[in-house]
Image 1 (spheres, rainbow, N blue to C red):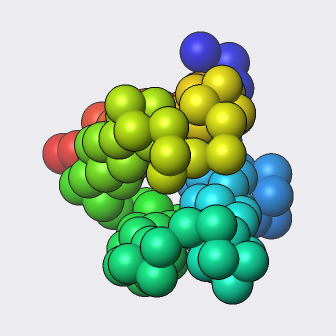
Image 2: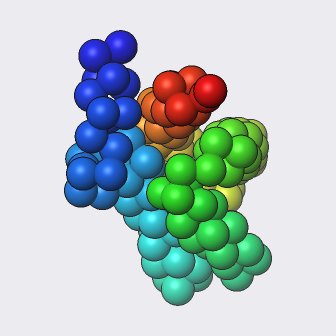
Length: 124
């Protein structure tokens, strides 16, 4: 709870790598970059560029602090990683997919809680 309160207090002062929404954005961009590299290496089908585009757009919206975008990203990220685990041919390693999912979800969950706390403190 301390971390949430500290981020709410310093919301506009934190650099992007210091805030949960910024870390979430970086992790999503890293995932998009990894998918792009796998497509270029002909390991992942070119339809993965749809995921890359979606992750890029969602990453920007998450950094913008849109609570609905954070929730949408959590749902999209869960579905995409569940598919990677269910159909291992689309992932290099299902264990890596699950670990990356967990790390990213933790950042997204924290970002969502911070946005909820901000909304509660600014409510009349």
